[in-house]
Length: 546
Picture 1 (cartoon, rainbow, N blue to C red):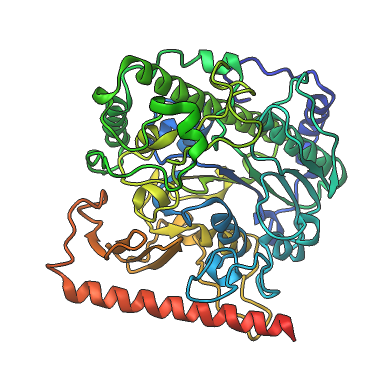
Picture 2: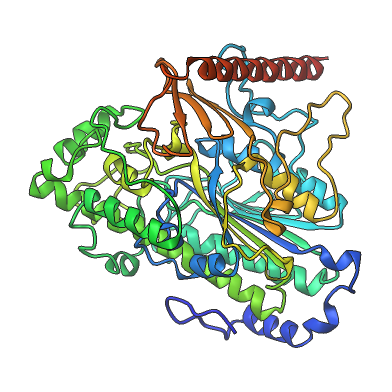
């Protein structure tokens, strides 16, 4: 059955007719049964600054019918992690390494550890998939070093202007910059990213139907600026007037109704606000923008209206992204290849408490969500988006690093349990995709470090688990390590805290004083991993300089 969309989808375009023709002959084009037949097409979808509970199948009230259907047909991870920020997570996702190992996040004790360029022993997953017969495409936000076409991708469409959804200055197609989008065109970045992705799929089906493909679909939504189409914002008019405290409780209740076993939201932390301060925000927005997590009841009527309007735009951006994902899934189904396509959806970090004004600036008289406005979600709504967890993007408490992760693969014989409790990380998807494609991510360079990411194939197909998995984080002084259910975590310049996540996923009961020996052991392990990564970065730098 062709997927139902939130609004009527026109099927009379040349691309649509092309896929209908391909659908009619798809049985003739499918690969033969046997070893080659198990290699699925792969679509890796990354949202930008999406909170843990922002989508419907993770407790949200935002309309995400298409992602919810993917979850219904597939599985949801309950303990999936990212690297706390956009560019580190992208490096982890596409290499299988921690970003600090490949110079995509800093190890503060090592000079020049953040140089931007990956070591030669850390190719992107597209290069490995190419050796296994795949063609690869990327559409959306890049934020990785190098040119996609030099890193295993066959086609690329990059949105390199992250301050404008309606008239971006920098769009790059296959390495060539496109003309600047004028403000009078009906352009919207989220739609453009999906359009190009479908063009790549159509081209592949007409010219390379005998080969599988990998699509990396990296949306810029719902990252600031909060820009959305007026008709999408209208769907949420007054929806958020009750405020973020009420939304947090509603989402928490729905999460548990869905089958997640998670605690109620932790109390607001009134000392926590944006991780960076911008004086122009204070000048232009003033009291309308509280710079901390504060109770909704403490806001005056003008603040409440302003804040609810911002969340209306955030929700509209997510619903539009979901709609565009639905268009792509619909295209795959019309082409007869949906059941043989592995689709993964996740976010690069938790929702953001950042508040800044960039790009073309902010017109206080402009309608929120319009091109003339530049607004950010801010700490109050970010905390609601990350329900039920604490903290935000850039922190490595659960609110900053826990992401929804949906996997759909109808012909993949996934175990029927709808949830996966395996502790997993963005570093795991590169080895997983290569494993499913029939290869291995073992490095060819004998001096290269072992890939820390692990394949999730058995977790998907058999629902097997590795209970004592160790994961490590460092971003701008925020640091953490998780071993089994124990998590040692600290904010920048703050002392370590210890939590037992099996009973305290909200990180509210610091048990470090009671389990000092466990904390010391975890700290030693964290330090040892940091030193190992520092040595790897130093060695890679020396080899590059020779």
